Length: 332
Image 1 (cartoon, rainbow, N blue to C red):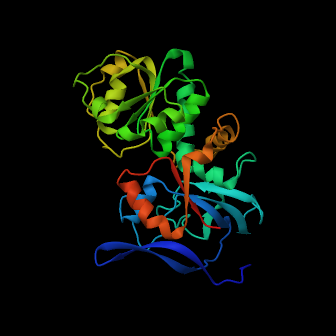
Image 2: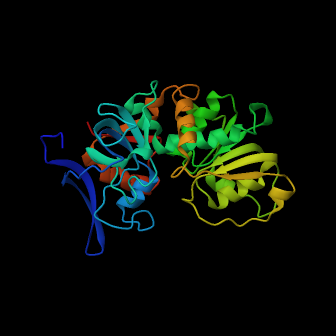
Image 3: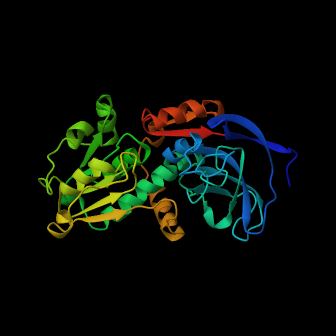
């Protein structure tokens, strides 16, 4: 181990008397095996899966104690990989990081080489984490959407628009020349969403209250849905013929109550976005675009930076739906 320290700090979640508690703890270094790297973490970011893991959700993390953090960016500190050398700046997003493998809410993280991406040249470490898994998921969604739907085809609707995936999606689509309608449950955040580039803000309660019909009036050329449930149902029923809907979240519900009419009468396409195990070739393509053609203006203005001792509070706020934009953990 090329380190004078014997331990490092990590945000640990433990199960005590059927309750889950968190604290900053000193952790011992583990042996690096062949095909693995040890990353000295500079930044991580907060995602909904991190909040679930930190609350003891066994659907996300099976065994505790555990270190959440599905994103990390930093410098290779030790390597037993032919792909990466000590000193290279790299990032890791999703896969099993922070779920059942100790994650980025720590000063060091050990991961397999095939989870690692070199930091894009046009993104700083902090900017890479402002995107993080949320930005990567937004990028994947936009990538699949723009394959079929063009700006002249009409409005794109984005649900959960004040969240990480939603807010980045609004910004990217606006930069690419699309007219964007943003769905949110937070009426007070209308000015924020308009500043991000939305041309219209739709309140969630109004959109959920649409009539219970198999098909609704066509309103949108396409959609990026981040929440699922009734919102996704009504989006699908409101998309133009040959429109495309991407779906990446289930915070509202895992169920859909639909007929097949939107798909066979209007030819609507529903595309699932799996950011956890997305192929590396697509990841690299999306990261390249996020660092260049899709790099949004004022990226850091849409983020808040915190330290280790603010994690518990912010994760609880995220679970309650009270965070907007991106929250970044500064480790170094």
